[in-house]
Image (cartoon, rainbow, N blue to C red; front, side):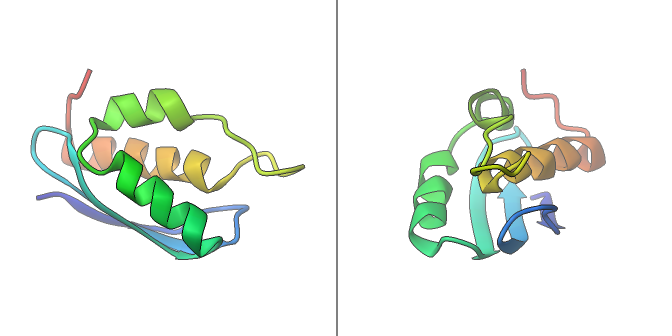
Length: 90
């Protein structure tokens, strides 16, 4: 199963750990740092979802005045995952 450790930019979280299966279904997500309760909720909500579905829902979410957020950075991690593992998930 493809696995990625992603260093988010511009957020309180320090690391995103993502595992997907070969069909582009998210199997595990962990955030290190950030708002623990909110990020646990995000992880549970996206687990079992298709990469593209999550990107379509969470892309562009902002945190306060910041141009990004932890959900938005998860989208960046998922996009990177698609690139490195050549997953077609439309």
